[in-house]
Length: 90
Image (tube, rainbow, N blue to C red; front, top):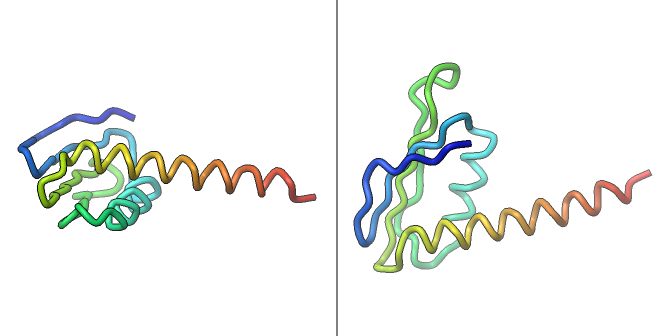
């Protein structure tokens, strides 16, 4: 995965995620919506076979990168909990 910043301001970040699709982008976008500082979170993929997701995240003044870090941390925790429960299955 490669993250390329396309545009960045105090309240907005637009970036491309190389090598990813809806499988990663959808949970990340949904997790961003749980942050009370996030006003807009979304992504688009022109064509799933030949293009990468382009994300836009806008906040109410909090740094967008901070919101992204928090969302990634929550996703990591959730996936860790899932993995633990999955390993307990017989």
